[in-house]
Amino acid sequence: MKLVQLRFLAAVAQNGLNITLAANKLSTTQPAVSKQLRLLEDELGFNIFVRSGRALTRITPPGERVVQCALRIVREAQNIKGIAAEHKNEGRGTLSIGTTHTQARYVLPPVIREFRIRYPDVQFHLHQGTSEQIAEMAQSACIDLAIATGARDLFSQFVLLPCYRWHRRIIVPAGHPLERVEHITLKHLAKYPIVTYVFSFSGPSSLHDAFAAEGLRPNIALTARDADVIKTYVRLGLGVGIIAEMALDAESDSDLLSIDASHLFPMLTTWIGFARGMLLRRYMHEFISLLAPHLDRSLVDRAAQLRTQSEVDALFSSISLPTWIRTVAGLPQRGAAHCESPAQAHPAPR
Image (cartoon, rainbow, N blue to C red; front, side, top):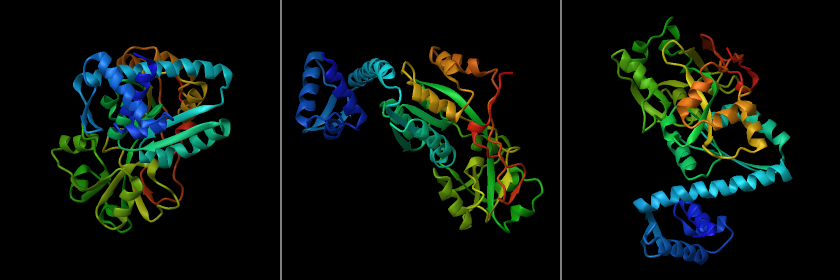
């Protein structure tokens, strides 16, 4: 068994079982990859893949275990290279982030801009998707860092660090009946179609849970993973929007009424995560601290050394997290609107 074979195996798994794509990523040929995979299977004595002609269709059950081991071994080999690179040139490398549309569109731009100023020679890759899609990227080691809210059970192999907290807000067009309601309740919302984010397919939804606790069932008219799409359909009159408060823009959303919903739904926490056992290079640490200043290198390193996510959570139990707190000037609203970049808020241990 050779490291090159495990590298080829990991690359194939990371590229949807497409040998041609894997070969291109590895700067080699498709026949070379196929040959090494066959040699590895011959040595193991079982098939890692199910084949249809020359195409790989799926991974066999024992093959799944081999792939996971290969990914860990390749990651450790990358860690060794990273240690050398850290000493040779701290300002060069790559950084791949997997995150949701809301984070990519509304939270990360100033963070990435500052990061690029500090590290112009680091190649930055930003991948967007649902929590499930981000988890798939993490599982196949296609990303270095994941940034999301909730869905923590999908990232069991990651160390998840809390970044900041935020509330949902209700948005309606000017003149909507809810504009005249002094104190909005879930019963008021249940009377109207709702346009909101795509729900997780693998876990509970705090929005659904809030309605269920009141014996209500929300009328979900449309879901989307893009806050801008949600706002578009609210403008068309398809329903009442429920979005993340940081997804509001004072200029482009001035035609919408923003209503505080912090009394209706629980506060949510956005986290950043990385694979357990992964070597974080200096520029990765700096990106994390740009997004969440309380996550300095010493605290992140302490968290990375813990064996379970429960231990990580306990580490942060006494730390006050930053909250999205900048008022959106010029945006019609009811209730306190908070929208400050988390990178501008500095929490302190209690």
